[in-house]
Length: 306
Image 1 (cartoon, rainbow, N blue to C red):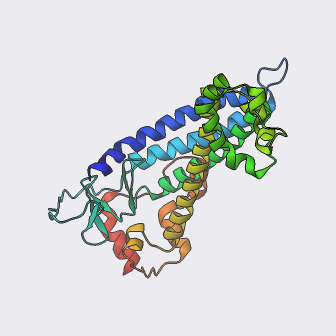
Image 2: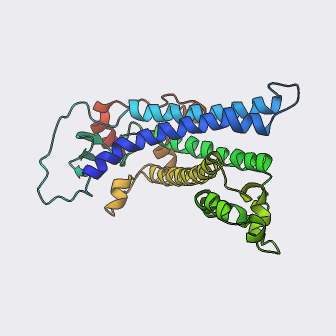
């Protein structure tokens, strides 16, 4: 449980740090370099990319904040179940009744609990599921968009060609080797005699960047490409999984226990319960689109299953 509590504190700090780094790299490095135009401070193309990036980032941050501000906890219950001594740490919640769980990390009763999100530091349930899904969507869009601009920056600034699919796959291992061993290699060997002839394909692809020890900034940018790729794909996977569960009227807790929920409502009504009637507005703005109060869970549960 100590490891889970540490992760619950570290994950939000990681999210805020990655967001700040992404913002700085785009507005002070990528966009000014890629879209620079002579005698024009702010070109229409640059303005378009700034607008797209701000739209993605503000929606990701806005839905992240809404996920935290609208917790799925019950305001009417202060039950703290006694955990048995032999309860394993991997069990982070206990089922109570009527779809309610007690989260061992939040130490609160959660309504229709889906899972505990370490990046937001709280549980995802009936009140904040929509915001979590939109947060996953816009986080994925921001990261994948950042990946594209990062690749474009390396192409423009260092003339690296990504036409060969192996270029991106081998970029991180090669850059790691050159960063940690490049200076030592160049200082102890004659570069001209050390590079094999004829030049292998790896040298031809990365020669503009790697015919010398790469700088810390270059190595950091390459690492960020893989960070954006990983977070973007994971967020997209989370989004698809949660939308599928919501459409089926099921939660992740129920799926883990192997419980098949027989939802009498259609998938449209299940999505409407989470996204609300103003779901179109929620696609573009991080605003509240469904009225859900903590005290209404029992009537909601009876309406859905009776």
